[in-house]
Amino acid sequence: MDCLTHRLEYSGGELGSDQLRYARRFAPFSVFSTPPVVRYGQFIAMTTVPPHITAQALYTDASNQFSATKKLVEGLLSPSAASQQTVPSVSRREEELNTLLKVAKTNSVVAKLLAGGYKKGVPPSFDFDAHPLFPIMRL
Image 1 (cartoon, rainbow, N blue to C red):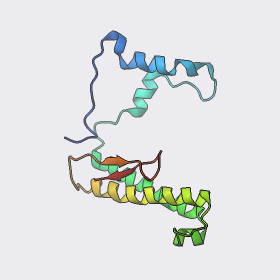
Image 2: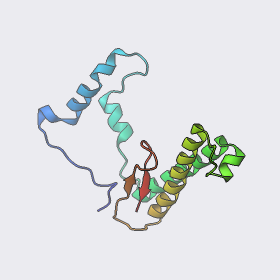
Image 3: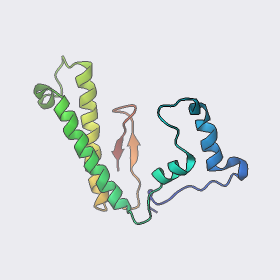
Image 4: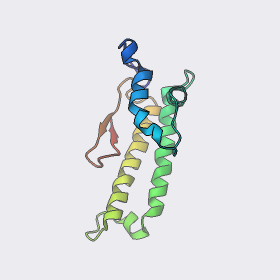
C-alpha cells in the first residue's frame, strides 16, 4: 500500500467532523487581520492532492525542491565552510547551515530513489537526530 495514497478516515460523527475540529483549532486566530484566515473549504482545496498526480510525481517534485534548497544553502555558506565542514572554529550559523545542507542532500537522493520506484510500497521513515525541525528521510 502506498503511504501517499492512503488516508486515515475518522468517523467521529457530527461533533468530531474535520470541519468542526478545524474551526475550533483556528478560531483563536480569527482576531488577527494578518495573515487572513483561511476558510475550511480553501484549506481542503489547498491540501488535497488531485487524483491524477501520482506518488512518483510528488517524490520527483520533492527531489527537485531539496536540490534547489541544497543550492541555496551552499550559496549562503562561505566557500571555505562549504569545502571543509569539520573546521573546529565553525560559527553557530555555519553549523546550522551545514546541518541543513546534509538534510537537503540526503533527502534529495532518497526522494529521487523513491520517485524511481525503489522499495515501492514501503514508506520512508523520518530521522530527527540531525535537526529537530527538518528530518532526514530514511529507507
